[in-house]
Length: 66
Image 1: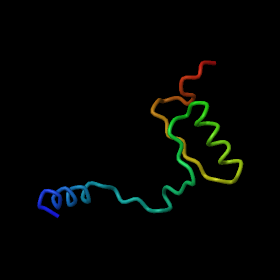
Image 2 (image 1 turned 30 degrees about the vertical axis):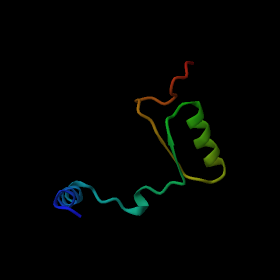
Image 3 (image 1 turned 30 degrees about the horizontal axis):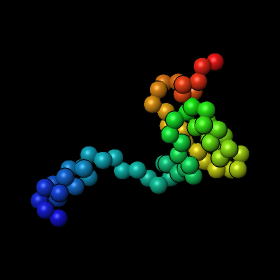
């Protein structure tokens, strides 16, 4: 590893928060809470899987209009 890469690794290791394995233990990570994302998470839950839904907006639903 060259000195720039070593420096980057050292800097990242100082600023990165350590994450315990048990903190984030999901079987499925769904990106977006639109209709398809919600459906995927619900179906995963129905078969006993743990799902995390990640949404960029403050509200769920994606581009759905009620």
